[in-house]
Image 1: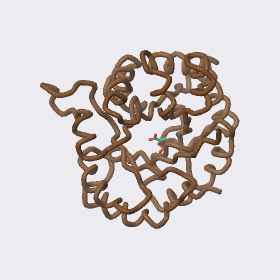
Image 2: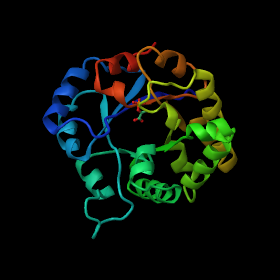
Image 3: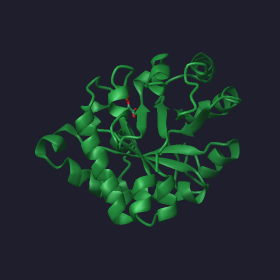
Length: 249
Ligand code: PEP
């Protein structure tokens, strides 16, 4: 089964609501594509204006985070209901910046993934190794562990629709991209791991992105790899370059 590529922008903590609308209007004609799913993951406060601005285009909108409770005394958090109420269908879960600065763990990632599925939101589940772990030769073991915990109690039908973003931490925002062979090796290992947890159908259907300094110059080589189904793009998603990444062929 041919998997459709998905190229997602992660805006991180950038763009005020008015700047966000201006960026959507600039990128809209550049990211038009029938071959690739295009997703903008934007700060919570930008979600409503961005959803409005993308109307009538091929752009889908996702959140960058979500809490795993329904409602209550969790000051500053965003619930799944808040996202679905405004029409958000994707959420990034467990980005390495959230793990590093906001104490997210594999266990909270799993809780968020389960909650997202409960509400019909597709999670983009991030995993990735540090430079030290890569140098120690434990990358694959580390990633397999992250995946196994993230997918605990997730059904095969849910897992088929999930998106995994393999993002080596040393490549995020550093301008240092994993080589296409390095990225493919880990994405293939992730797919194998999904096959072990579930079955061949789930292994074939799940989409696995690469993220880490993807740009207009390296996207084509990365996305040509058999186990890389697109990218999660930070810095380059805020510029016209994003259009070249989407239309990488
Ligand atoms: C990211 O934010 O997920 C990311 C990969 O960032 P960058 O493309 O800037 O490395």
